[in-house]
Image 1 (tube, rainbow, N blue to C red):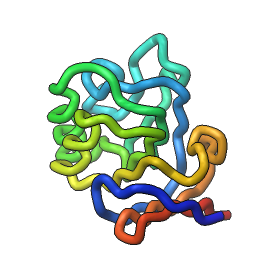
Image 2: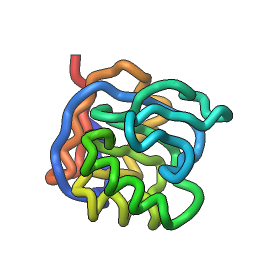
Image 3: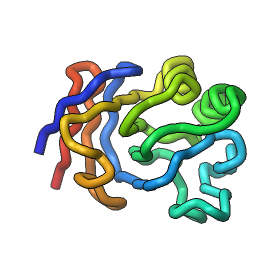
Length: 133
């Protein structure tokens, strides 16, 4: 299934999905060194988002989260791509400066069409995501 959406940060990635139904902050919710979610109130506590396609509704929190995402990219612990329901500026700027593909406003709610473990292609050049086999 191919679903179109808005491109925030261009790029291409494919891989396994991790889905969170809660707002996410890169400042404090994730261990920069490992990519593990450390926020105890998270619905994906203990899971790694590094090298995964990270799907969550929207960001929350401090503007420092932008730079945390950049640090994760430099350390190799960042997500391969991000898909949001609605992207806010902190996540948008972080993805752009870290060169992480980012899309939002998909034709279908990403929290309903993706589940953790799915294989997904994010083509943030042509503006679509695709669920693979």
